[in-house]
Length: 471
Image 1 (cartoon, rainbow, N blue to C red):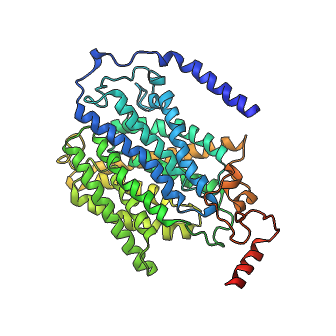
Image 2: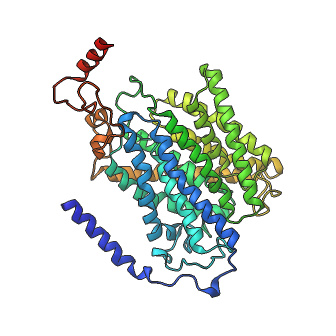
Image 3: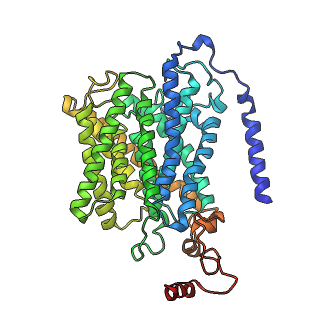
């Protein structure tokens, strides 16, 4: 009851704080540019595509864990849709895109979406409602938090995760989003190119995930027990939804139904396809067999790598970016992780951290003003300084993600348990954290769910022996 009263009190305080903003006027017609219905429809559909990526991620990750942790893994991704959406509309959007404060953070002018209405905001998108831009960006904030969970899957307590997600979104994602995309943000002003989130989404999620994995340690039995994915068809469905939704992720970032959006759409698909092929071929050469998990991982690696470059590169460079992404992300997962011995459960760092870093740097190699006059030429088009600029953006993203994540986990650890106990890990987080099972298996002899004591007192070992005898 104390916990319920605490939650109720916090909610009441939030209502009192944000009530004035809730009744504030949105953008006035005098501030608005002309709304284009085609652009508006395109961005809203793109926002819906990006939204479906997070449930897709839940399936992608959920299929790769063991049966006893399937629901807890899915829950983490699904729950952030609600948690981060609420944070975003209350104050996250204002921190990320609100009027600039010293090139570091957005102001609180748009808290509770005050001033964010049906008219356009010319600073970000002159032909769509401000609300459309806001909700499109909300879906990026949501999935970024979800991506991190792959690094510490099967061993983080849900309560600690919820607190972490809220703090990390506020003190890592929102500031970095402002730096890179917000008007006045210092990385944007420096000239770093990031069309749809190589630094903002993938680098900071991958590096943050690795930081947590190192801090809380390996899963019980890691390295000595077989930890196979329990449902690869689920993972492939999730990867397919990610590939599908990524068209909204990248093409939608043009914020208009135009040629640039078409370019982003095509190069996104080309890079994903190329990385699927290169990962599988590299795996085949190294391990002797091509796997469906490799194909699914490869497509995601290509999607990650092309994200920052999608609005700045043409088709052939996109294929090259994808081919390289498939190879280096496979090596990060199969070689680097093994040699260094860290437990990045579902390879969030190996795919998103490494792939995002390659994509951001590759943008500095292949960007062309012929594709996007608002961008810049890269090294291969005569502008070597762009690669240096991209490297600064990458280094800043790595640094803030690692340092802030370390501090946040340390802070949380002072007042609550972050990692599940050994006993909880053995039983599985589905039961110990949520009181649920993903699969209700029944013993055909006793009728009891497997894993529970039966009314006849027959143990699991005895049941197996009886089945063997009957067979």
